[in-house]
Image 1 (tube, helix red, strand yellow):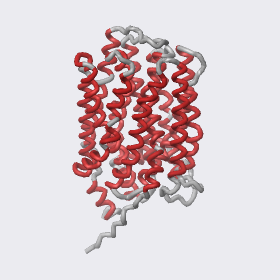
Image 2 (cartoon, rainbow, N blue to C red):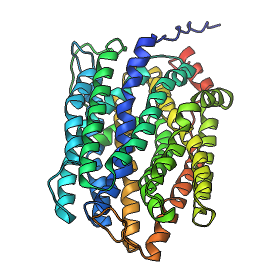
Image 3 (spheres, rainbow, N blue to C red):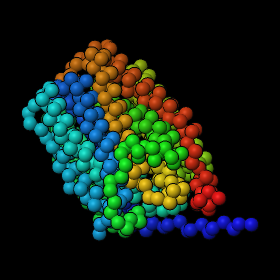
Image 4 (cartoon, one colour):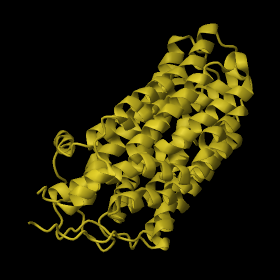
Length: 455
């Protein structure tokens, strides 16, 4: 009879390290929110950029992430420095992202396609800087604890900071920006300051986070095609990536469409703040609930429930044109409860995939996995804005350069209503179906920890 090897005690993360790691997600939440919420609208309704061109500006800089993010992740897997493997790369992003972000909204007095070109260049620099910070930052989560359920509890800290950042930035950024170029410039500077403080705090606060065991610096590793081949070998990464991409696309469309929905469907541009609070507010209060649900129904079951809530709420919002703003806010509150679960479970399940891969292969590929994830996340999220921009352009949306919204044709109004609600609902529903194909459960991971070689 073979006696199973003893299971090592889960790594306990000190409270100070949890907070130090969590505060870094203020950058994540803020950066994912402000451009996603305002950049497309800023170009079409302030800089008079055609909708089709504005969509390209939001999307194309993120295509670089398909190469850059996996490269950064692979490099951070093999970096040797007195700061550890991940933190030097975070520092590069910390010193460059705030400057590039501020410049994106602080351009010269240009309109139309010249303005689009300026924003594209600055946003490309911004996306590049963000990859240097975000990829190694995400990789840390899989290296902080070995316990399946503790990861969800640990990531509550991250999600609380994410929720607070998204809620505050999504509420105050539109109010500060208003409808004038000067307002957007001020907003860009203030948000850049928030990014800088958050990233510096996380850089110093994660000094004690365990890192990959690297004894010597190595090359940057295989190409992105080879890295995807490695990822497919895990058996769990690709199903998780597929359902994550469906959710990211749904969120990207919904977020980019919010200012248009508030302005043209509800007739109140200021309502974007309250609508956004309905979507994001549940992040701050439902995390303990989602942790309990993930324990009771496993993460796969909880993920399916979150997708169902998101899809139902988004589909219901399509009736807001006749049922009014109160109804719209209630529907988006349902979306927000589901979205909170998706946000927590995505990062927790990704950390599980990385831990499982380490047990199976004996290697450290957290940076590669998170690099691929970050690349797909940013590209697919931006693709949501691109698709919405092209949909509005095809429907005859009229761009403008003033504070008063211009009258839109009925086709553009229909695209604003249904494109920004039913399209996210469809892709959230797809993610629900894909969740059933995700194979990694608490029992599977526990079994692999007991018998890592697969005896």
